[in-house]
Image 1 (spheres, one colour):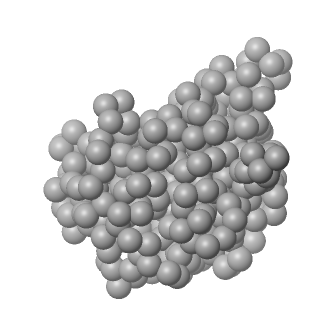
Image 2 (spheres, one colour; image 1 turned 135 degrees about the horizontal axis):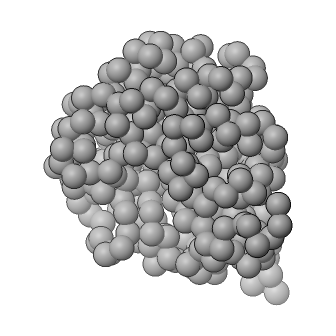
Length: 305
């Protein structure tokens, strides 16, 4: 692919406040989460995944979902999304006026059973009324497709499984999907095959890359997706996050690292890297550890001179 065919602009969704913080053992107060969202939007992020309306029994870190949504000073032009696992979660989310809800399914049967206790087909069927209710309320719907290249229980996931899941998502009215490498085991060609398997159901403008950096492949996978014309990506400030049901999966790719790479390639993001590094340093300081981002560490060290 020639350079001229790469996207000239990339839209990033920062999932740090939700996907990033959901597994933190220490409670993160609502005020800190709100401040993180404010810092991300001040850095130029125009899509932020804020919280999840799941049972606090399962994810105690997200029990303050309504408080966080109410506390955000919303900026026009910024899209705030929330995860809604069922109709009950959606009804609670609806009160907080999200711009987009996220439903989810796995391309791996074993992961689906471990994660949400039902088959892939059953899981998507459960989401049908949620999607319909959101669309009726004028709220956008994104479908997160997890384990699209690898699964902690099944190993490699065939592209046919990804196509099957994408088809089910399309059927229930999902508007765009994330092709997610949940355990970070994917490599560039595998990621391209997963995206290729999604294309019959969602065009390239409605596909989002979501890569974890467990094996250090996330930036290479991002480049592989860019080469296919994908221009929407999810990342997490300071590389926060993992998945409670994906053993050994480390954080999402750090937003700082993705932005540095894109800017170095002449691709616009609308993000101020210095302010983004500050946002990552803010949450990392609260958590008492350095940011899980090579770029953030390099910039912070450079500042120390």
